[in-house]
Length: 125
Image 1: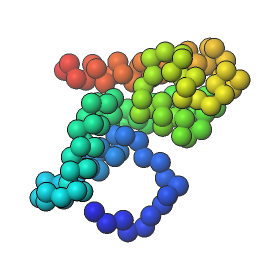
Image 2: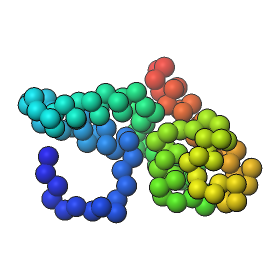
Image 3: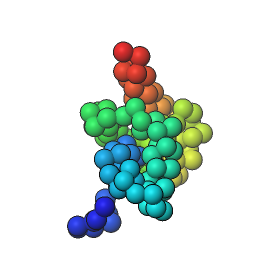
Image 4: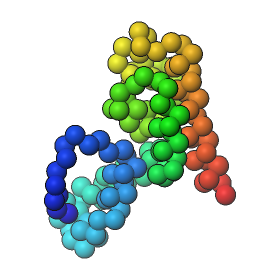
């Protein structure tokens, strides 16, 4: 894998990292450190919520999150970790108690729950 133009300001979701690594052939062909790290990273990410995500669901999630004033990094963290409690949101969103009302925090939980529910429904079919 070779980086042609590095853009260090771009944030990647776990889904995007998993997709890139799964499409990388180097870890399948060679047995070296890079192949081991790639394999272990894929195995880890396959046990996270990103395994069930897709570009459409991510787009819907980000669209639903637009009215809530969060940074890109905070939205990415919520997408990657899919919190289930208000306490988890407090840990992921800096100064959440000052920046988010209780209603907004519950809305975030509902948006994340909808993302998880849609992913679970797709798994069952």
